[in-house]
Image: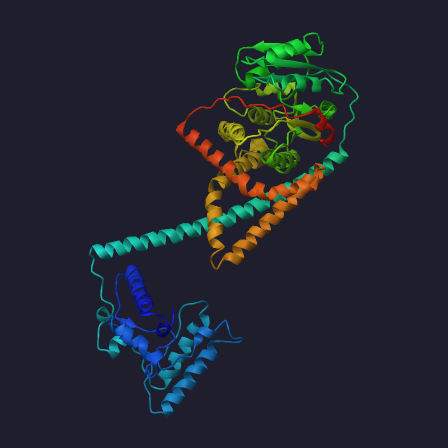
Length: 581
């Protein structure tokens, strides 16, 4: 819609040709009529009025100019601009023309560019007014004694027309896809913010519940701490030494070497063969679930605490976990996992994730008995609950998630104990991180599919209506479309919708920041660490997306995946335990 008199000839011809092509794409008809923007007077006198006429004639257009222009496009820009305003302007201009002896007129009204309800209403008023004065209304074709087909000739259905239609189809498809992505972007943004808000409410309720229901242990049933290990020669000895500091008065340790090919078993045997608190076993390699089952089978204790061989517990962690088993319906208790080797940016990001996502989510879901993962790094179980659920299984890579869900399905309560803290060794390189998270992602995907019959099943209450839908939507569906959402947001920031999109995204970021701050407050973490949440949200998420797509690809191909081995560094030092709270 440029002023044709003020642009170059090349630009003017481009505008005319492109507009004609657009009409041909949509209607299948061309046009020989032309009205220049800004300067379309029916009696051109000035250069800026005549230049568009001259240019249009080189394209064989017939120029149509108006004699009455009420400038109805001003509605929305002028206060109290109504249909009466447009009608009065038309009548006043007509009266001026009539005084000059001109009784025939072309009236220009705008039907695009915003709300035109005033124009629509004014059109009826104008027609009725002039008909009452004996006027008739006609078309340009009638004035020129032409048919509609003369003024709008059909476009020949040759190869050029088909190419134009293909171009139009692609443009239309792009528009539709853009609208779908825009809706998905807003939907996922709103769902994400709503989820964060609900988690915050549930966490606050759980926090209040925890303060009111602190149990006091009067009896100390036997507890076995099960430590499965495969190629953990770097961590095994120091982890067992740490466990011997446990303040719970009635415990032992069951160490199970799962066929390590390094010196794990030899080092543990040499260090603890004379220690009555530690039972040491070795078996052929069968995976973590197999090692856990082996350890559980070799204890008479009614309760077990399962941990990873790279994990160090606070001395009172077991005692904190066991407080919950004063309720006989509790089948398992999840502890709080924190990163104990914050040595670089990647481990810093993982530390933030553990605090603001994993531990925070677990606390919220605990309130509605919907915890889906008692973490392998620290979790306490009633041995009977494990037996009722069928023990650890090897058909998924997320044996902790699978067992947790089966315990819920068996009718037990699973609680959370945020003060039972375990320090774990997080992967320190991107390669090791990718290996670990791929296993987790693929394993949870397997577990969800295994228990899909519980989804929206009233028999399983919060598991079927909260926990499993949360996994489906926020761990797989929303992340799958996130790249499109991010792309659309970036494009949207360059469009006229930038204000809306930026506003929605800002609301989401504020909610996210609030939740992160609350999570840090609950965990009594130092707030300066939140500074790293900015690059974490921007970069870390894309790393996780790449891992998610790898998992999708592996699932679609139907390939299996084994646990593999993570390279350990032993950087979780005992000195960090004092700062863990």
